[in-house]
Picture 1 (cartoon, rainbow, N blue to C red):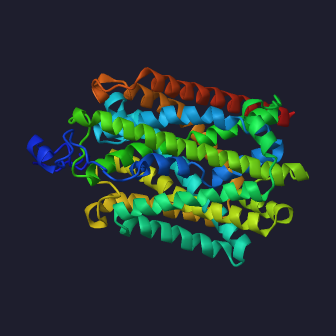
Picture 2: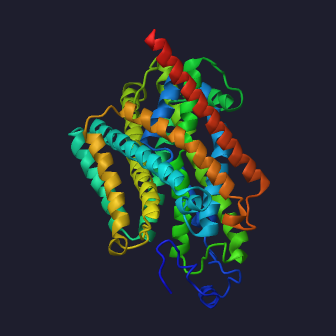
Picture 3: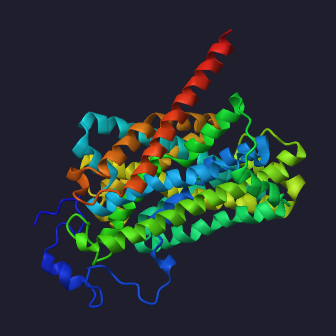
Length: 457
């Protein structure tokens, strides 16, 4: 049989091989996890959720906490269900089809539309890579001194080499362990002596400040939380998992596995997005307690937030915050570079996948390396990190809504998922997330246009 680079092993397999590869105690064709705890099933959803709290996200949450204190804590209760809805739709597409979003969109949209969306995704990801690398270098410089530019180069190359040479199964374990770096922000929250009564009250009884700056902050939080690269990454990682586990098949050809896999997807996505939003809450609380409460309101970068914490909350909180920036940066870099590489390689029709050895997917790893190296060049160019993050957010806002519309249509389209369409409750959450992003995008454009007009007077 011809080996189509876009097809996982499952599609190219015969039913007899599927039956032969299934464990004896697994009549539905799925690999059992007898004796293993439920968290052993966590993977793409957990990594995706944790990668959302990248250094650029840390900067946004730090700015929000420093400027408005606990009053923006309520946003995490809004973003959590919205993230679950859209990420679960993306994960289901990958698990049902065994393919990523780019291939899925190609079945529903003209090729020029898909090419345009992929181009914008790559631009946004590369800018974000540069900004994240700059934040990581600055954080390490603050912690131990030395030249931040050297740290940026070393960290970029280490991340790239791990992606290329470490076997996929071991690499996923590394990414899972890196998610623990975010727990540093839980420690920062307690070290900063937060007012937990007020912090928890803000979740359900927020103090609103409906002015231009407050609205901009809320839009920024929503924009940094719901990002297109996360959709592409989680869908592609579900397809990778199908290739990695012999007994697994795309649900389109093995619907008997649907009940087990959909249950796993729900747990993985709920835990991953819950972890992401929980850590975001602790970042807001930590900066609200240590910075806002002490009159520090103007924070531009995550590194500045770490520096500002030191005299207020002490060396321990400062080091934890800096370590969190570096750890979550190492987690976000492969997600940003990888999602771009998957999308471009799919359009080019070449072999792709982090589960493939470098010699078997040279073009894919060349694209991945190119994205990382361009991001490195941007970081070393001296570009203002806040301007880079701003333009990344603008591009993400422009492409997020059409991509989310495409994801939600595909997740229930008979041509894509057959009879395995999303249940109503998850569809509702996904469409609410799409509507929220549309509103956020319009609000951002109106605010920026208004600023431009006022500035020209």
